[in-house]
Image (tube, rainbow, N blue to C red; front, side, top):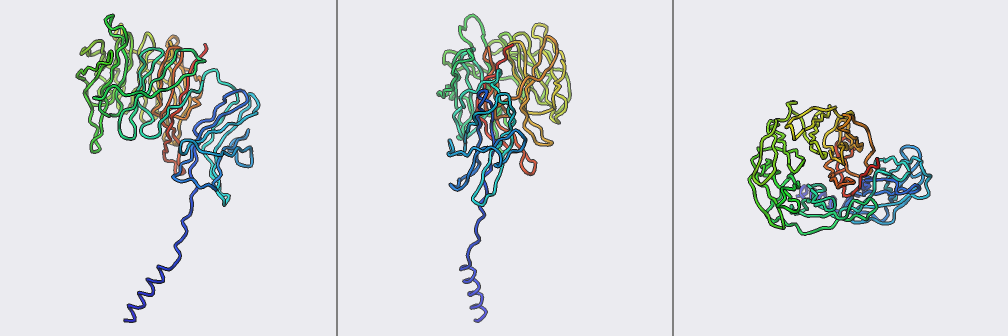
Length: 434
């Protein structure tokens, strides 16, 4: 009996003991963008990653003309969070042409401080980039597929948090000074099931079609940890949807549009390279050159030639191939001279093509450089760094006089050098004056 009473006393005593205090952790802080909006101002965007922000937590940005700025340098405390955990700020009265380093910070009442990643900025209005309005969405995918009907209308599709398609339209002409906007519209393909990595392109089929026709299909659906590749393709004209069979094999597809044709490369079997001109007319073309396994492929085209870029999955040499649709012939061109990478972005503007962004895994790093390839000289050159947040799965849409670059995911290294991803929903206009 005494033993039972003793155990009861111990249990009662343990219940009366004061519960240990839960240590409050500082929220993670991330700097998304920092760019010169004029010759004397820098605008900054970022986010605090925490489910609940304590009112006693101070957060903001710091900057200096030397790397790794701290709160002992210039500081701007931010008063409110926008749209949940996002913030923006402005640094003013800076010297034109100067270089500054920017970080975000968070600080608690114990004076514990956590800093974000760092971005280097030249305080000078860019002649290449123009910041446009962000796409307004929070959950779901921050990437998708897009195609343009003409140089004034772009359609972007993404899956929301409910695995439903959302459609956004980008309007206005090619004037660099216009105020370009995104507008959410009703998705007009209800029979197009949710999927990953579909294709989406536009063709001018014939004189009987007074406007371009959009084609949407392929991709895969995930079922019990398996990829189920889909064989449907829809084309739409005058708001009427039509279904065609898709004769392609399983696997990802790299594609581009050239001279009223779409060209599709089966990545799992590069002997199968197809052209699609008119309804239900898939024609096998010259097989893609054999370069071995472990490559991902990206497609783009100028007005006269098509291009496939082969990214080595081991982040080694990035190879470039040109396709002549008149001769049905492939020619290997000069390889990309920059650092090897994966998940880059590949796009065209006028008579040249561009490649960059992406990521490295050893060590983990998101890349922002963009390079230009000139087909006339078979020469690559570095052009600029992307001022936006995204590194991978970034969208690029050529719109005549400029290219829109938008969305995707920012890549950062954790303290353990593991990959961490942050959503990017910003939009930028890329235009060269030469």
